[in-house]
Picture 1 (tube, rainbow, N blue to C red):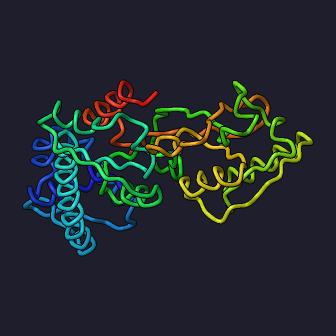
Picture 2: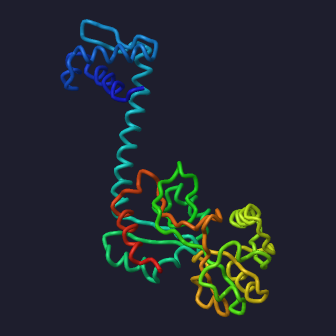
Picture 3: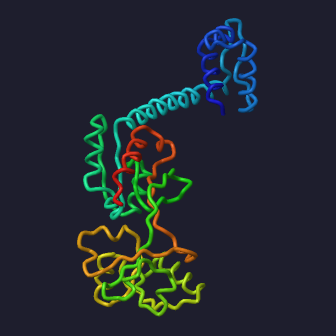
Amino acid sequence: MNLFILHYYTVVCETGSMARAAEKLSLSRQALSKAILALESEVGARLLTRRSSGVVPTPAGEVLLRHARILLRDWDAALAELETVRRNRDTVLRVGYGQMTYNLWEAGHAEIFAKANPHLQFSYRIMPPDQLLKLLSAGDLDLIVSSDRGQESQFASVLLRELPLFVILSREDPLSRKLELGLEDLDRHPVILSVSSGFSDALRRSAQEAGIQPDFRPFPSHDPLTILRTVRSTGGAYLTSKLHLLYQGALEGLSAVPFRQGDSGLPTRDIYASALPEFLHTPAIQSYIRHLSPHAVP
């Protein structure tokens, strides 16, 4: 139902005259009559009756008038609330980071942004990606920086970084002296896999398709520091992205050798800035996305 025509109808009822309503609405009388006829056709009832004093609602028209006033009042309230939200988007920015994603930018980069934009009420939080998506969906965050975009139809995203893969090895491993490693270099070599990991499944498939047989060793943890300690103690290899290389001291006794993607079919870790579609291009969010680029850790 067209809210404009509902508004026309309420004005006709309030003025009691098609002529006065048309004048108030800056419409021709013919256009207003056509709109009222279309409304009557849509609801399937006659809405107005003529009297010597003008037009008055029929019993069905009284019912529609009562509900139309409620609908139009609620619509005005919604527009006012949306305008408040729009204004707040220019003065408030709440950013969420994945637990490891924040370390991909220089220490203090968020504080630098806050200092450079004193007009913004800026804040940031660090938490697991699934929680970030829930808060973004609920409107409790304005922007998230994470490798998880959720459902692409729900959020709008901008690619910030593509993170290459590295093979983590003991420095005593002969492979650690190579400039880069491919999947074929891991044939018969112990390779540590996180259990129930989509990347681990992709690695298994890629090795099988290439006819390569790494000595896969499932590991019951997703914690990168625990896995790196296991690499150090067992001499295995672990494929990961730079996300896991940014802990201070994490690579003591280990080497990170670039992994040659080639035709391996293994995905890189992509980092996105995501927001609700209607807010991604607001000035505050766009300003923060631009701020992230020069502060990325190489």
